[in-house]
Length: 442
Image 1 (spheres, rainbow, N blue to C red):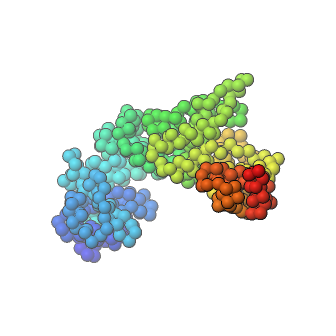
Image 2: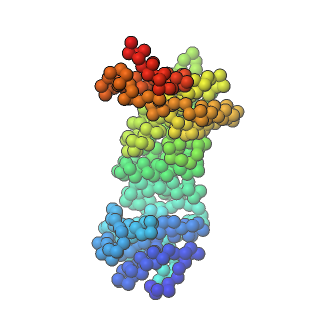
Image 3: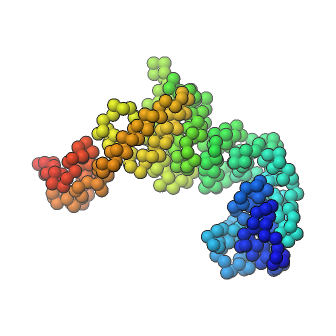
């Protein structure tokens, strides 16, 4: 490739670092092509983001050729080069027996036709041996050659087919969809972390319910999140227009596209089928919020979410059934803030709004939620104490006053004081709290 090689691809400017990677490989006798998301996005008329290179150079050769660039090796013959804060993947051609001999063989082992396209910068040509551009025009996701073979190579591709169809608004080719139906059970061969990450990507599309319904129909959901299916076709009471499963999907669709919010919505009623009881002819779900939080914890541990994510989401789920009627006292509002935590208020309000909207009976409740949020903000602005750090006394004060040694009783006493000042904020003065501590001692 000449130094004055074209700087654009389908109207997209090719980053200089990508050109440098290609040139270095080609000058050293290697084949090198642009593949992947950047080329697909360019053909779709979108801004290219992820620039990937396919080459016949082995990972060891790539390592040797790019010693001056920060890099790390991934599985499947990929070396990621890190420069200027961006990542660029250089992957050795794939083939039937590991590494392939040509770009054509590499493209034959890619997942879908819209991803099985390469750009030859040297000859300024697009290589599209499997009709990816035509499938884009038809707006269809189709596996390359035999879908059973492609999914057997990497079963996660079944979830990726669904995610691509949602992101692009495409249908899934009937033969490809039939292969997902017949192979759904092999998804358990995929590392849990990869399934979790793909699940999150599906959750973050504009309408996740379409993806979950496809996973349900193909059998993937039964393998990944069987707990959600327990609510399928399970009717609720007259407060809900929809079944448990349908209500969950409506809630997920209604809430903002944020990972924590979407996961909270997905799990907020997950244990409802397990606590569902008919009392005097009406379905009741007593304790379902706490039960759902506990089941959500089990699911998220299984899917290897972080402890921080599990804590945040289970707190949202366990508290989502809060009351917000106008008759609540200011003290009740302060107790609510204390229980939930100031940092979790916004997410919980959004979850409850989406939950109530998904009851299916209209939007008249929203003003009441907004009024409740305003009351919460008013209490917070008054700088009332909601955490132990806001108390006018600390652990040393408690130990000195009561003659205690460090231990659980100090924390228990501080929490008693916090509950007291939440009821009566004027008591949050050091002298007053010391006086109360002395009364406790007596």
